[in-house]
Length: 95
Image (tube, rainbow, N blue to C red; front, side, top):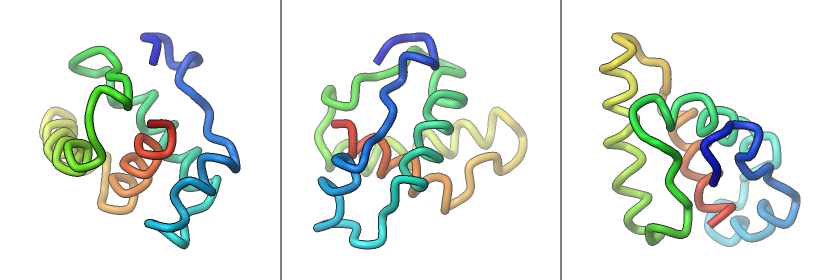
């Protein structure tokens, strides 16, 4: 992923299809929301990480920790549980 948010990969129906065995209710709209969160929040403290840099299991641990940090830095819950879920699904879909 590039440092510029407009270079963050846009999800497609193919990305949705990749996730349906694990997340049967995932939608393209969910992945778009996750992309938006990724583009807006995931470079607040560091550059974008490439989704392939980490395993599915690693991302499942990394995302919750980073969400806590973003919320703490923002002094409010800017990423709630639903948004965290969308973010994780987005990252896994473009992995």
